[in-house]
Amino acid sequence: MDTMRIDELLKQLLASVPEALGSVRSDLERNFRAVLQSQLQRLDLASRTEFEVQVRLLERARGRIDQLEAGVVALEKRVHELEQEIPPASD
Image (tube, rainbow, N blue to C red; front, side):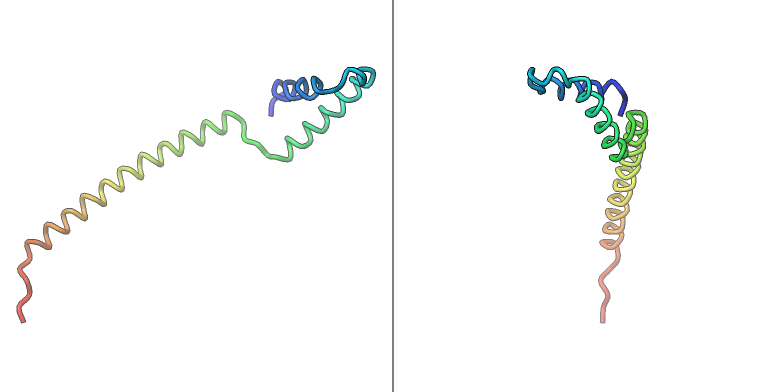
């Protein structure tokens, strides 16, 4: 997660700190930042670029699956037509 997002989270956390604790605000900020960075790194989040690459790959795969499904439907239709052309077996 980029520093800008961490800073946004940090501002939200610090905004919830009561005014009476203003004297320890810098210590809290350092501790909050360290905890946020540590925990967010553990999440192993994908970057926006990596995410967008995966989205494009999934879109391509979805398009290919749609093509294959259409092909299967066409083949099933053709098999059904051919089965209708075969005369019934006589015993």
